[in-house]
Image 1 (cartoon, protein in one colour):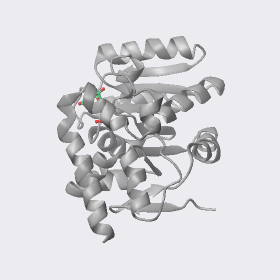
Image 2: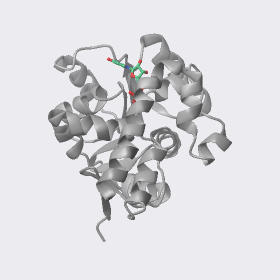
Image 3: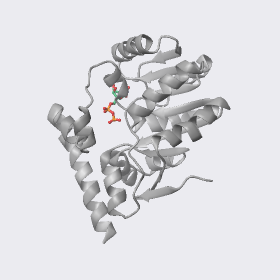
Image 4: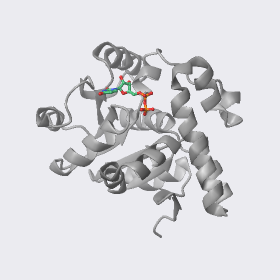
Length: 242
Ligand code: UDP
């Protein structure tokens, strides 16, 4: 049965639990060496897509757009089309790392500053000692520089984690993925910073209460502008519903 989608501001989110997404979709696709493109979209991404047509086009080519961010799940409830659950990019990456280790699949780490991606890989090697690392590259290159995609291709990875932040990560995947024969491509934002221990995830109880955004705001007040976008998003959803 094809997956149900729930449109939020014109972005079709797949309505699936993390478990079903992994077991029913991503693991089989990896097994068959298919290409897959996953966007983990939060309210800021949805708002950005609304304002930037080429970014919107780049995310609409994804095989799966998943709801990362409590705001998306809240919006789906306001629209009376509730999404089953929030599926965060970071959690999905952790599950994929573990699956890759157990199934002899290789991972490429693309993005963040050189020292951050190095540190993130150190932690990955410690936690997943059998994992095959296909390679890595820092994220500070020009989107037009096709040599980066060539390097990734030569490494022949099964999974490519693109931690370039949005919009760059989705623009990069959309631009270069068609040249790959296999590979699960996923934008993971600041996840390498979390792996490297530079950014802390909110404690469980903040996440449970859907307050991870508030925790981040308190820890990184320079992000206040981004939080405003989240409020604008919720505001628009409520207006639109009426
Ligand atoms: N980054 C990168 N290349 C760039 C811009 C950013 O690799 O040209 C990295 C940056 O070092 C950080 C991540 O992308 O590790 C963005 O993190 P952020 O928390 O801002 O993620 P977002 O919320 O944008 O997904």
